[in-house]
Image 1 (spheres, one colour):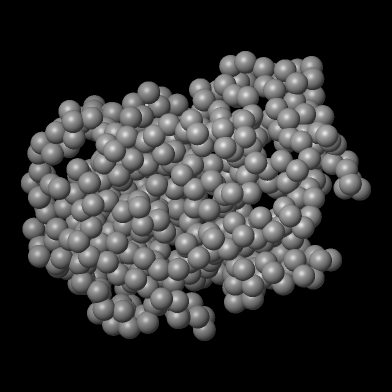
Image 2 (cartoon, helix red, strand yellow):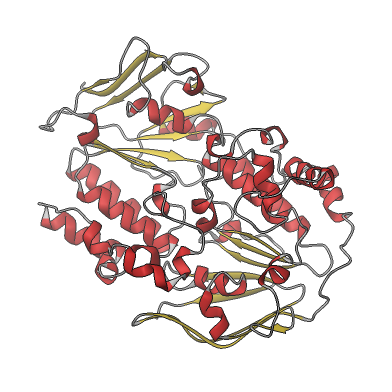
Length: 482
């Protein structure tokens, strides 16, 4: 049987990117592989070795892409990384850019970024699946995180790869689109010579077209097994992961003295948001009271993140709207930073914008000052608080490591600790479990549930997976696309 990709006793030249033992990996014709393992285990390192990003000491990667005409790996292997899935990872992107309309004209529209495709049927199927027609004339920075993922998948599939590698392709997509994407990939593997490699943190919904699984643990690449073999011995996730001792520590946290103590946390009155001729939110009335825990739902592009940007004062249009936070009407003279210091926030946009290669503990500490990065020397009492929350999230050992050297899942855990570090009155969690492995997903859910059982804690949470919602949810709001 033809070997498409072969690595034999592979050792990268750069010690920083080495596994703990030489890598052996084969992708045979007709195989579709899932690479799974805990956050920080080395899944992305394995993919970087497969794609030739890191040269090997002796035995280079052997490729056989026939019947493809090109023998070049760059022509035959397309890799959608975690950051790519939130749009093109260029250095010009900054946090809040999506909400600043004056930057729109300097960015390309979707139509100009999609490649030509000789296969008109494939183009039609992709455009129908992802609703691309309605996005063609939209500027790239106006796409929601889910729409960005659809754009990136369309762009990659139109290029006709021989091997398609995708890092967590289903996160951030609404349920309907996830099902349609699985169906599309299955059809493509049946109709063409395309072979799929998925890098998955969430392993409870492995697609049925996957034939084999490679487990990576602690920088060890385990032997490839069939999907059936993996499912038979896949470890169960505990019902609870957060230890009772840590749970009690959260419940016993002392309350700050400068709390707002207001009955109404968020009030929106007939709020409308428009970009050009596109209406994102129209005449929205919404009230969030102290102690309520809201699930915010809706299909990709329905305005969930835009709504949260209004609450967090990240969207300039919020000052033209009738909005009150903590009982204070927006634009009545209150400081943005005075409002923000009572809000803990994490989102896909924030994760994408965090390109600061600072020690992880500095990233956590930036949550105390609502900054992207840390621009003041950390006080010892602040360091203790940061270490406390990093310990709660099980990432204490990451404190001294630089943020950009962490895996995407480890980065998300650091940003979650950042959201909690000031013990906020209002917790806003936009897709908080993106990229987390099964155990960390359960751990974070435990932390959220425990934190929200404290007095007067209010939460708004967005997720496309119902099972991710904590059992403290009291209310829900579902947005429909205009």
